[in-house]
Length: 376
Image (cartoon, rainbow, N blue to C red; front, side):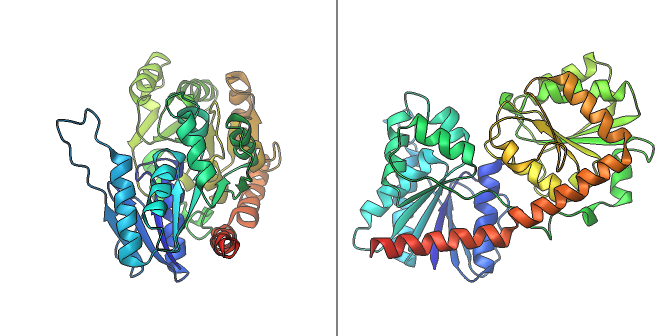
């Protein structure tokens, strides 16, 4: 099948899923066309069945804001016509679902259908904005199929937008060969922490919803009780304030800031504990990556995270904003090796059994086929 993928090429869960789904589809024999304003950061453009089409937006003085959605729709329609694309998979409702719908309408003489996958903030933040509410609802209603990455997000989407259509849940996924405990190397770990120190880790785009101050506060309380280091991976608006807060708490010299990293499997596997105290995670892809890597996860009980983590069995959950709980749970996991190893083994087993790449990609393939049959 020939598939076009439209999504954000930047760091973040939706971009990661779009890129890795496309690569997995190409590995399974499909022809995949990525369409965006720049190449997605986890895409191998040398793959024989992977193609990238850059969306160029010309800035005219007439336009205060360049019309990217229209340029994207035009490029998608061109790719459909020139390459015989049969499915357009839009990741994130705005602007991709709208651009995909326009492209399908522009190519009415081709048998092409659009699929929209909802990832979270496209519904909980962007789509709920009055400026985008109606157009987000329209894009979802006009897609041949709509999926969400968790039951939580599917229900929220239906309720917020009064949808009368099905939103199928297809969760995020990991490649067990890429994320596994074997990625942990003593040489790399010693670059971050000594053998006597615990290594905690956080990875995100450092937006306010990630509650970065809670990461720093939790670490400071852990560091007051035992030798520890904190590995911070990613970039975003909360980096500067978090660095200042770490200095105020006297742990600035124990926090390592790696910035944005394309391949996080190796440094992630070196951690002894992963922290994710977010206000809301529609799924929590990075938590799944940590689980697959054999790293115990300590997260907020919010959004779709409880669908991923069984508290006390495959990870540990605390109420949102409860730093006392986060610190106590972190100290228990780091101080009880048998408990940590149980969480590590169970988390890895759950990640591989329920969220492996092969299992989830097959579900997308069946969806692509099913909408074609339904339309026929």
